[in-house]
Figure 1 (cartoon, rainbow, N blue to C red):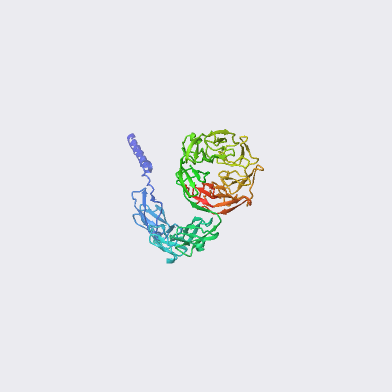
Figure 2: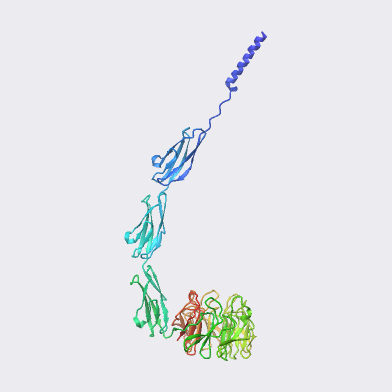
Length: 626
């Protein structure tokens, strides 16, 4: 009975176990299915009209990676193949490419496609082209793979012509025209450039001038608006107004008056320019030139009437040892003896014995200081230089003034610093000796012998700038003292002229603000003061520095050349008349020059020598004012 009962229990137990297993406790459930996922690459792209773009797709979550490609906007949005090759429509806009999973059509991915408009730009977009001139244009086309354009001129043949490569030729007629580049992919898209064809113009330089009888001037013409820059020159008044050649070289008549030089365009004879020439009583004419071009030299009138030109800088900016003599009777220069030392910015003083003292100067970078302290004597009788005693201090950019006692006063200058020292040269002993020093260091100043035998030292510069101070040297005491007042304007590169009245006129120069000055300062020994100029009186007609000022036999002062306030070297000249305290133009030099010399000859003429022209070239030419 017990065994039967156990068997039944065992079966019941097994049945219970099966029952439990059947309820879930005895069998493992299958894993969940993965989610299908799709990505499209590129997800955003720009495609030109009609162009193609390949898309790729990545499908995960299924072994079936096939997709169906469509365009959301349908045929209006382009077309795409089963391989993802998309073709953009002709219409611009934003479209959408869709990839749908074939394993689960609820799963898809989308890419945006921008089809941009065609755009055309042209370069240059505005240009000036002279009559019949040419200009190349380029076009840039975006929004399409077809970057070809069609070129045209908006105004047709009247506006010029253009090739298929964008090479434009302007018409003869002046005006504003328009070059057009039209896209061949979309002929509704174009760009336009404006073309200005200016009129032919002619300019003449100088536009005005003053010349003495038979004076010379070379005119220049500037022609615009055409490639044909040829011109014809003439004198409006005919032969009575002077002559001019085909190169613009004008020779004034002997008669005074106003005349006109005319330059006419060969491209359009109706276009011309006119310069007015005033012929005045006195002016410059060329004379013989030097053997060597030079500036920063000295020129000294000898007792026999000849002029000794010494040293200076050559065409390469190197100091010279050579010297030349100008003979007024022949109008020519000839070489004479050379110095033992090359020098520029030296002084040259005619001594009472007829010899010339040449002292100091700059001998070139790296030259020994002793060279700048040396001095030499030129003897016209032997046409040779010989050494004399050395100065007590090397110096250049200094002054040298012949005193009534026959000695020479040398003041200031520069070595490694500006100098306040001064010294006296005694021709009897051939030696230099120190005298009282100035109250202020200075170089590039002026020194003028006054009628009472004292010396006025004025202006100049030191390492701190341009100076407005002035000092008087008294030979009786051998000392300097400041004047009772200063210059009204500090100046360097000015001129200083002793007038017949005893007044000293300081003209032009550069002030401490680097302005070129038109005004003059006057020192009156009677009051021992400087007086200010009044606008309209004592004011030069042209601001200038590095010019020359020469006292003429009639008491007037000839001011010539220099650099004006535009920093341009000029050929103009003017006369200062002390009685009226007025400046008036006189005949101009044949050539513009600065840093030259001007020497009053015994015949009353003024010899202008060397210097620098507007292009910076060193000059060998010379002119006579008469």
